[in-house]
Length: 336
Image 1 (spheres, helix red, strand yellow):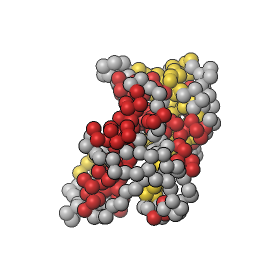
Image 2 (image 1 turned 135 degrees about the vertical axis):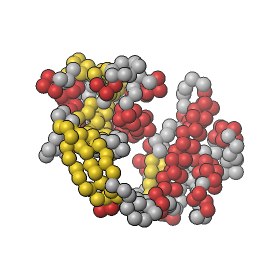
Image 3 (image 1 turned 120 degrees about the vertical axis):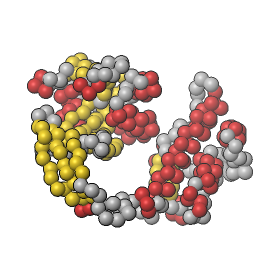
Image 4 (image 1 turned 90 degrees about the vertical axis):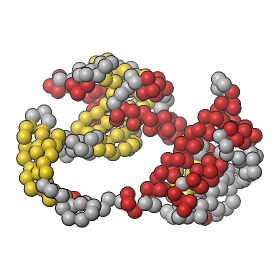
């Protein structure tokens, strides 16, 4: 199915105008083409009836630019590749082994749709790398700060900056002024128990969500600011203990992103930390920071549902949980 989608979607992409693309697939072992895969792909207009089930030949992977594994067995047994070959792993269940309501055919349809999304994401990645226009033309040296002063400094800081910058069509912009909400690097920690398949959520009052139709008390993940002399991994462990009473055993980096760069300097780094959720709960937080935090341990599947239903409605928590949806089985294999 992945080979069929890749051939079909790559042919429609801008990459096909630049490169002669070759797509092939093979397994650690060859088991034949499953007729259910042919059937569900035909439902969306992609014919894979002429494809074959092939076993990996020695050295064949090194003749490709990209190698993608689609199941944990292939990921673990994939030969070691040189730096000339890029690699991704899409952790997908084998639909042929599915035991679920709706039958095996429904599992094949779900896999078909997930693979399409993954191939589309890969195409977007490659198109961006192939498009020079998406490479920033300017840097920090192309900005002239004329005046920068603090308007207010309390729990947060507000600055006024007068500046000008270079223009895409040449020359400089007019001098203009912007207010900047100054905020440092925040760290968000998704605390996950791979043995119990549970995540740790916290509930607390947020002044910025006063007008939230549901409640100003939001379900979130443990988070905190990086203090001078700290590294983000230390913040993960410190805040996990302060806000949830959890000891973090292993830490994995997920993302860095700008929260709202048109108005604030705040950056967020998201991590996933391995914890044991047995006995976790209660009310936590530091009194001198006016924290009143209720800790809830929920099944990972419930957390995913809470995103769809709008119960969880803040960006960092949504991004972290969606990452967990894609990487949950891999984490369980590595951490259990």
